[in-house]
Image (cartoon, rainbow, N blue to C red; front, side, top):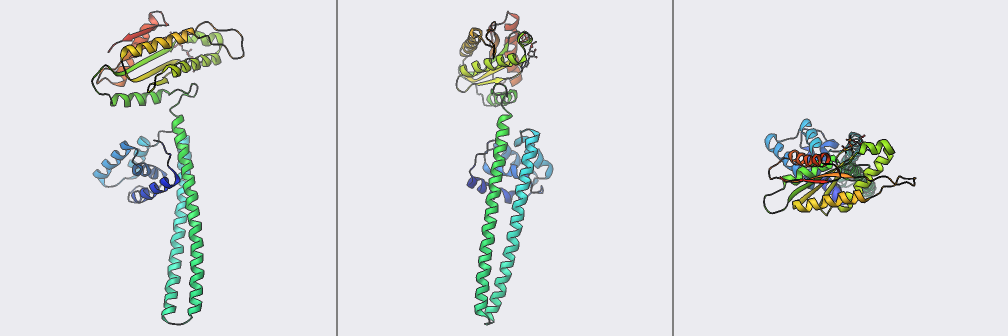
Length: 339
Ligand SMILES: Nc1nc2c(ncn2[C@@H]2O[C@H](COP(=O)(O)OP(=O)(O)OP(=O)(O)O)[C@@H](O)[C@H]2O)c(=O)[nH]1
């Protein structure tokens, strides 16, 4: 879920979320704010459905359910960021609560003054004084309201900054830091979503390439770990460059890669794997700061096509079997295992 709302949109969503939050038995805190914000924004269908189901069943969200929904549908970010953001929301909402209480006090005081003035006017005495007092009170009230508005605006900005932090953390949690490719977590999520939306028919189906750098341990042992990292980055760059639009190249393990092709014919997936293999085998990776070039780096690959109804694990395992056949068959090759 991405949070890219303008301040105005965010304020509007906040206005919609607050009354919903306040009707629950769970307290008014950042965790409940986060789920109700997503609920009213209508962009998290799974969360919305889950909340609707709980509400239909029990009529309210308690603390445990609120926390559970947050963990499950909103907070897939690391614990440190979640703690920092939670604390930030706490501060902002606390600030807003103080402002709202202050507004209540000011309004009550203003009401009392007007009441007193109205009585004085009814009794017909001290008109001039009463009008002057009313004017002064009105001005003071306007000043207070302006200050209150500024504080709300400030709180909104802080909320936006916190949301941006969550968005970035979430994005980073799906990327492999070394290569910038999708990481295993992102790959698993996309694979599951892709298979869930697959329908029968036609030549096209999800296809999967998995690749593993050959004799990588030897590369590390001979040239050192930093150079091993450089090789991993070079392989990632080839995958990134050759993956067609819509495909997801990912680093799924230390020296293991995968490319998910959501809709492809098996021969096309095979050609892509062959192209990747050739490009890597033809490349010569130079050590940073060194003149000599390295002996060839090669990649073994396995390719398969999804069988309708098959789980992500079964699908991946068959691609892995194909990869294993490439390894045992001599490496630097592509093996295809049809479904
Ligand atoms: N430099 C570097 N090495 C890594 C990283 N992750 C895993 N490795 C190393 O990758 C090596 C994998 O070696 P193995 O699985 O034994 O296989 P291999 O030497 O590649 O041989 P084959 O796969 O059989 O061709 C291990 O030595 C790991 O330490 C990483 O991020 N950077």
